[in-house]
Length: 311
Image (cartoon, rainbow, N blue to C red; front, side, top):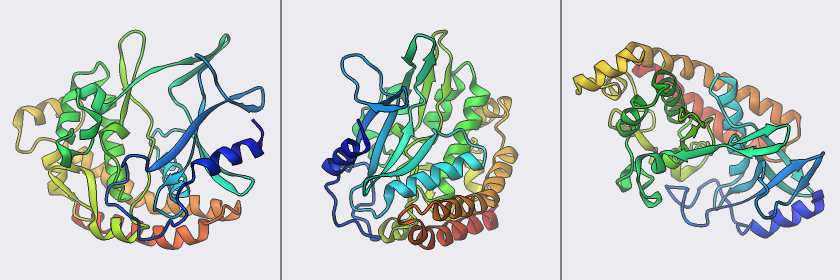
């Protein structure tokens, strides 16, 4: 497929012509809210895949109703990578006049014989929860459910640390859509399970409705209000009121002191990293970068400062 072909495909799934900074819904993952398709990069060209041929990249052009949402996701994903969190590789470019977020599939392995699939399960699948219940508010997995699951994995210490970093990052950027299906485990042939890199990460703080409502998809220590998560919530997260859980987490290196220090590190690092990513986006002349920056960065800075005060 050439750029013109891809532009036509992007245009065909772009049903939203009235995206605003207000946003339409508190939750983003509603049926049909985001158009996407997958292609393979092979021999320097984008290719459609037929039969059992594996794709290598996912193309997205944003969530319905939210202005520059795909660019928002690009900025947040690049920011996460800058602060040291394993994150799916992303690019953002124009095909004709159609912008696209291009996500490299982390569940693919390049071998001498070609591209192979790696098995993954999102956390709803891993916990046996139906996808309609992916939000905690709909009866879906809680952070404690996830901690209990990860404690049972062979690489429990690494998984607990990585999940906690991702959960805290989503808290700091005010991500309203970080539900259980947006975290996954990669499963190896030997049966090992490791938290997959971050994906589907975007901030709600650029949009009036999600900023004003200020709720996270998964609470930390029972607190899901953006800007209200501090030391007390983190202590509850690591089992302050559940001694057996607390002991098991501490044995795996996840104590209250460790978590508070990590939240503090991220709260200091995220605004600087996001500013650098936005500057790079402006220098690259990505459409909407300057406008998104004025809406997003000050609110992320404010949330990170509020979090530091609560620590």
